[in-house]
Image (cartoon, rainbow, N blue to C red; front, side, top):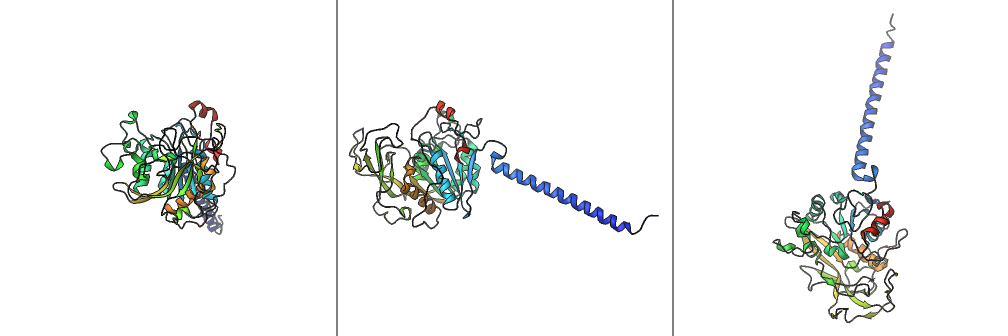
Length: 386
């Protein structure tokens, strides 16, 4: 005879088993979703780390994307350090992207101009800081950059970002040729490419003598009280990179913030020194460069603000400085100007004296070009900048 009292207990046990199976299934699905998200946003989960994201301990909810990729001024070093400063000292989420060959993911190759993985991060970016040189990126990556700019979100360009892109004869089918430094086509507003239209100037010239005449930053007339100069004294900004030539006046509503005094080197040229023998204490204003061109009358702007607006897009803010080599960023005042520029471009209150203390060890390399063989042997990994 079956015990009638056992039937309710059996029913309860079955319910517990079903509930347990249901919870197990939900947990598996949840874990699978987490793994999928992780793999989509962090390729290091399944392979080499291709970009870095620095999450702040106390996030302010803003996301900055730093785009590196130049052959000369070691943007991979300088912008990695600036990303750490913005994360550690200021609470921003900071993502850093690097040039890599598609078949060598995770290995930084500044000489490779056709791939910067991770640009999908622009979809969640509140701010972009860029230092690239003559890049010819594939359609999908350029589309992400174009969509960001159409949103009217802010951008800060350093040094060779004035000639950030270039599409030559081998890129005749690219629909992004108007971004090229050399563009002179039918799109009138794009003549001079990304540099001229978005930032305010394209590549023009080395105004100062490269590796022999440095840049001392002097406040532009009328800019003395600008928030971008908070916590900086006139003449404090210095970089061993030379002043770039620009055409005056700068276009549109561009406002010069800092002028670059071309300064002669006092000491001897030293090819092994990070500053090539130049020093912040050099104080002799140059009169001519090696071409015999007249210098410092007028002085060239080396930092300026500007608005931009793509056809069909929203209006945005840009801040540009033609300083910005990794060795330039040893200047505390230059780092502060970059940090201030980020706050200004994002319409955030600019600190009275921003904390720009270096994070970790920072020993930047000399600026200069290197051979393909050099980068192959160096085997520089994205993970090296963690």
